[in-house]
Image 1 (cartoon, rainbow, N blue to C red):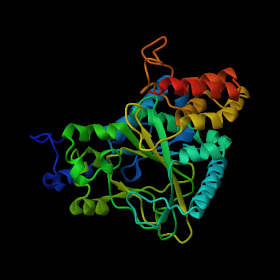
Image 2: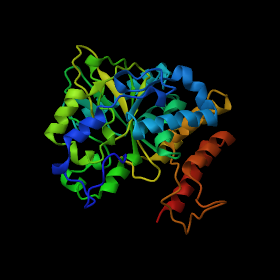
Image 3: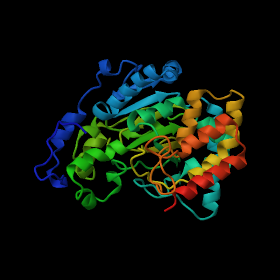
Image 4: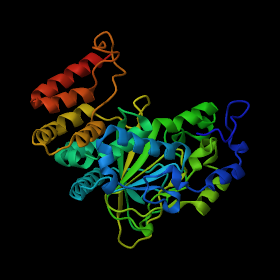
Length: 394
């Protein structure tokens, strides 16, 4: 991620050549508050932003870019992680979403399903895959209110640019739930060590640029509830995808990682190359629910398959009415569109779906925005979505 370490002569990273001393030097840094002027503080080397105060900055393009540039610098060359206090201030919507997710967990349990965790022991938590689509289909109004967060939209765009692809998974860790092991995340973090080593070093630099990790707190999470353990600046260690499974690197992580208590409505975002792990829930009664956001660049491949047309169809009436009745700001609308619709034109069948008025065909996101602002009927939207899908088929 930085040029602090030279690319190996052969152009590949190897687990055996990773140097813990280099890793320790990088992770021993301290946040320079001069580089994070809009942060209210940086406890435990994690810059924290009070969105109740900073929200007006997101309403104007210039000040929005100022804040986004600061966040991107943190993710790229700084601590690698930042927190947004009250990124989701609509606590009633969070509570309604929590109730929906609890229903989904009950239904999936009754059907014999058990959401496994990538990096935690089986049975220590409940996992909902594709919580994004499941919430939209179960409660469109709740989905709209829950995702109407300009702060989260700006955080995603700060790292990935426009037209990002939102996916989400619920992680519910019960009292006594064990901690995860330290790891890096998707893409290369989800490959075996042997496969990861076959990718050239420059691809190790590219992988973290394609994804943003985040989480929305659905309840208050003191340290004993086990909020995510993080090692600031660890994303700067370029061979980290080769190193994170080594016992000495994991021991260093456990000795130096930090945790930040969160409140309901807070969000945290970090570079996927940051060494991190969910903490152990040692509380007596806190059932720690976090909606894990895994957001992908429009230029990459998301981890989950999402039926975004179904989401658009489900939320459209609520979204159209909210805009017509001026219950949703412009920035909130864009946040909902970003979380729901496909914002990229490709891949498509250019014989049937040629560029119109530019270099790329119309996107699903543009189509949904037109339907909402022009007051279409649900039938008209469904017909246009079907026609778009037909044009895009091979």
